[in-house]
Amino acid sequence: MKKLVTCKEMKDLDSTTIREIGVPSEVLMERAALKVVEETEKYLQKDERILVVCGSGNNGGDGIAVARLFHLKGIRVEFYMVGNKDKMTRETALQYKIASGYRVPEVNNPQWSEYTTIVDAVFGVGLTRPIEGHYADIIHEMNSARAKKIAVDIPSGVNGDTGLEMGIAFSADLTVTFAYRKRGLCFYPGRLYAGRIVTADIGIYEQEAVTASAACLENKDLKLFPERDPGGNKGTFGKVLFVTGSEGMCGAAYLSASAALRAGAGMVKIQTVEANRIPLQILLPEAMVCSRFDQESNEQLLSWCDVIVIGPGLGTSVASREREQWFLTAAAREKKPLILDADGLNLLAAHPQWYQYLGEHVVLTPHIGEMSRLSGRTIQEIQHEIADTALKCAAETGSVCVLKDACTVIADEKGQMYLNLSGNSGMATAGSGDVLSGILAAVLCMYLKTEEQPPMVLKAALGVYLHGLCGDLAAAEKGKRSMLAGDIIEYLPNALAIGEEESEL
Image (cartoon, rainbow, N blue to C red):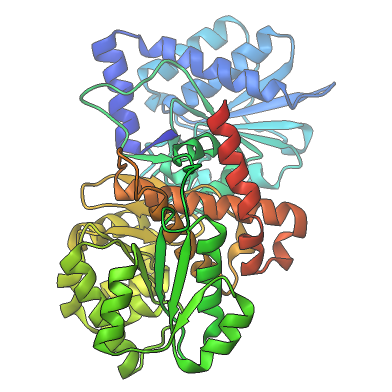
């Protein structure tokens, strides 16, 4: 698990390290420059000529130090001060003086085509305004040059919190970021502008008073899944009820239920319309199908299951509304884990009085469009503030919010948040969300019998990460353009095997 920071958190951590720990800012700058040089050298070939483009802030100071270190290694390098020299920070002015003493070449009118590598050290995480004028022209020239491109800490023009492009942004092949990955390097398009991302340790760590508010999972975190009981039975491993599938929407019910079984749930029942019974029994004979919606049948289903999934292919008819309201109410009464997805969310948006049935037992899984309907905010507003939107949804509902996007945000009402970095564009295909709801249900089942119960937000984050990992494995074999939602299910055994291998280490 890796911590992620906002720009403010990074500044606070930096300041705390300098003022309270006592590490001089010049030492941190030197460490940062050494890491950039170390990573850049892996790409260098013979007859390299490097240009480091520097601003007047501390990011520029890092860049001047990078140029000096390359110069002292005998590598042809020059630096270009695009920033105002009269407005250099104290640290950057010192680096400029040192570079002058070592006679590091400085250029005032670079010929961009002459360089094989360009290092961007113009703006760091402190950038708050769109890039315009001369600075925009320079970044355009940098992007147009046929050279390898390295960004120092964050590509200039990428918002460090949202990943949005601020007028124009440097397009890097490699970004060497310091201490912690910034949130803006997780969200698109910032993640795309960054290229390959290396997070370098320069001696800045969390302090008691200053911590990172978000994290991302990695393969080794799959060892958090509890071991499967060797003496268990199908009841031990969890029973999932799917309230899904209106007429003509059998596929969504199949995908979600199939994913739950493949991810390890012991038993599955699908409550759906009669028209879906035969197709589902043919497609998924391992599942049980029920097409009764009366009080007696609902009570039996509720008593039987451990986890409920409402929504995939449910539709928004009067009958679907009645089914959802019954199970929402019952689950709230018994605090039974519940996942609300797809049409389940659309019905919730149309009936805000149902918010009273939500709470910490519920996981909401909206995509951006569904969140727009739930929140009343435009899609653009949500995309500009996706992390804050997820946090606000969680706070208002008391539930875990899984806000699905290229970088999915998982948040709870306490402010705990995970950003998911697994997955790929091949997963942007019909049915992928249905598969996720089934995987989430299976993950919740894994913890039914465990003594230690991680928070619901972590369970949800593990499910989202597993879903993305399956997508990555599928894309490696089938290619992103050809992926289907069913391919994600197909690679669940491979992804879960990775978790088992990590547990053995």
